[in-house]
Length: 146
Image (cartoon, rainbow, N blue to C red):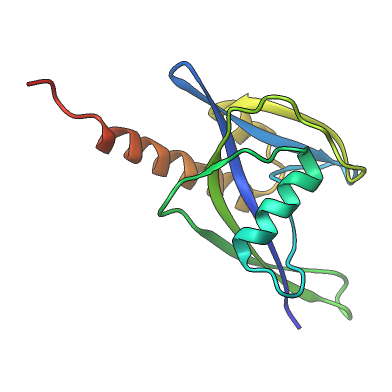
């Protein structure tokens, strides 16, 4: 049976920059907030619940058109399991993070720093896709002056 988790690539706009929220998990890795889908939840409900449980952040704006999914294997050779992870993209004005017991730290960092801090290649690829999506949205929302 495949496990299923959902989360957010979350950023805060600061002037012309974006600062992404990374969580430092007790296992030692840096990643985005995410968690297991519970019975009766859809992906957005799961991502919102997990974000609030892990960071205390509730006020977010989900950006349309971004959905990033990957599957990975974990466990030993005899007990290998598969996990599907789905991420959405969101922004927030909230700065303060209230960490859950699952984490030992958090940081709001600019894109280039986030790329260096993220532990897993799939998280770095996802962040690059999210940043590209936001840049395209920014470019499409600016109209030439008449």
